[in-house]
Length: 116
Length: 308
Image 1 (cartoon, rainbow over the protein chains, first blue to last red):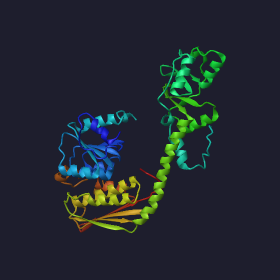
Image 2 (cartoon, each protein chain N blue to C red):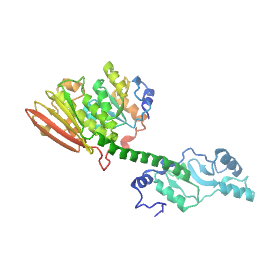
Image 3 (spheres, chains in turn yellow, red):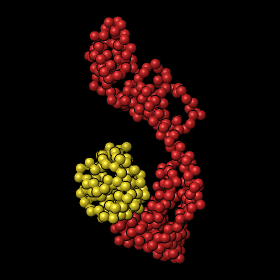
């Protein structure tokens, strides 16, 4: 799928679209940025509650193309600005990281990934 | 052993990888036009003309029972049984391919048999597609195009990285300056990108420089990050003036952290910093005492073995 497909997912609100036509191949869930940095795959979407400017920096450096901020956490304006500068998409949702991850796994066609 | 029309020993690796990596299912047409066994050959003739196909699989459910080809239709017209049913005149002795086979199989089948198309079955023996040599040609063309582009980019890269050879950039990093944290790493990333370095190498350099930069912000009394570029490698040095790491071995253990609650609330202090740097670096050294810590990591810009 591509970045803008995330906007269509139920309960997701677009805060910033980044580059909507970029491919999303994979996803990673985590709140510890260093863990994200070391383990998140490139061309991915990050599911997190870490609504902070540094999340955008990590995303940009690790090749993450979109952030899904869970639990209705609000996005600070400097984070939004950084995301616009770096062309990283941000979506917010009321769902937990687990719920949002399941939704994205389904959208990526990875719901059976555990078996593979 | 099936024959394929190229030499599998001396051909370029990229081509060989392609014909083994690509599977029949990546190439086949899945938009199928089929007919039932009761369909008359006349009706099949109309379907063929309308859908512009030259062979029609005859199915019961998802099970393939035969094929009616253009030749069969010509025979039927010639011999006068065009109004009869498919099941009485279809070709039943079928050669099929499996969707998981590499396309090298398909290529060799087209070489060995005179058919223009092969039905493709999945492992449940259900009809899932049809493959023609045209499908193979066009997919191969697209894939070869992509591979060549990649190769050209890589050749260009080598000469581009010459241009930044000898460059040294030093960035001063202040203690607890979260506002500007990531600036140096972003600059390093941009520099490599403009030199056309491969994305997965840039990612490694970005991870190493960001972790080192954050370490200076979070743990040191302040220091500097130095990026040095040479044609084949880049070296990132993080140097600070204290307070030093009490247990360097422990600091290299994933999960070990001395970060405060506040730092952790910002998403840092997972104890993955130095382990991350070490895992992405081709060479890594660390020295620490109470007067300061120096970490040097080297990343090869053009590794021979592509690892991702």
